[in-house]
Image (cartoon, rainbow, N blue to C red; front, side):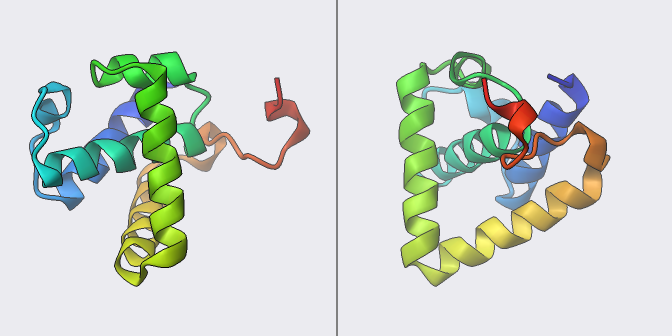
Length: 113
């Protein structure tokens, strides 16, 4: 796992929602903060090799929270246009800020463990 990639993803998501990056580890359940955490977890799982446990620990959460966050973002992006737009915009922002060789592509056989 590349620490700069991880930090860039989290910072990009929190900047997109207008939140400070250190808010990600707070126990707050404010809607905008929860949403930023969920999107961050989703993109970390999608674009890095971080495990569920590692991803959860970045936010002071457990692996089940990461699974729930990823499932929610995927479901809402399939059913709600605003979520789909946010995911597409954030995906493009993240892609533009990170060197592609650091991405973990889901469809490559080498990623399956």
